[in-house]
Amino acid sequence: MTDGLDLWIVDTETTGLDEHIHVPIEVAAVNYHTGEVISFVPYVSPEDLAAADPKAMALNRYAERDLASQALGPYETAARYESLFRALQGQRLGGANPRFDAVMLCSGYGRAIPRSIHSAVPEDGEQFPLVPESWHHRLPAVESYVAGALGLEPWDVPSLAQAGQLLSVDRSPDS
Image 1 (cartoon, rainbow, N blue to C red):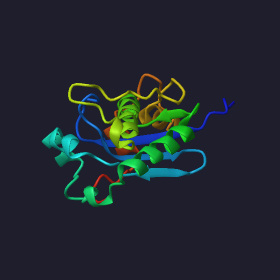
Image 2 (cartoon, helix red, strand yellow):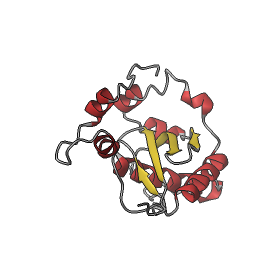
Image 3 (cartoon, rainbow, N blue to C red):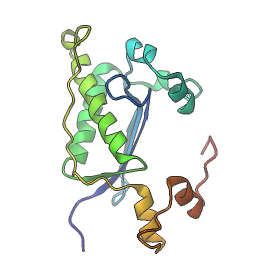
Image 4 (cartoon, helix red, strand yellow):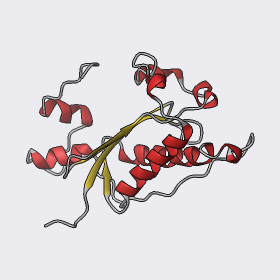
């Protein structure tokens, strides 16, 4: 039985783990049912780069993959977030850490909107708006889907790393 909701697998690479300080540097979403892919490298301001966690930037290989050269401008970033939020509206968002990615998407979109309107960038000490989630409230993790697909017991859900091993996922840096 289906509930009519599509599952979108979403992943963000970010400048760190705090949605009040850090922002997405790469956004990807795949509709599990249709195969539609939405991906982009959002604009990251010099201030956001200065506030980036060096460990996060090393982990996501920002410099090594030269993401700065692929980044959109502020206006196009806001437009791509808007398009993504429209695609996700009322749908189910999932992923390896869907709650984190959901919060970072909202934070990134909230920062992108005023930056696309140059005069609307908040002054020092002011907060960027947090855009509300447009997707369904249940955020399934990939591990749960792997457990179901492999017929594992409900109490035996593997970790993400174990799920990758069970599915023979290539975890090399260039994959």
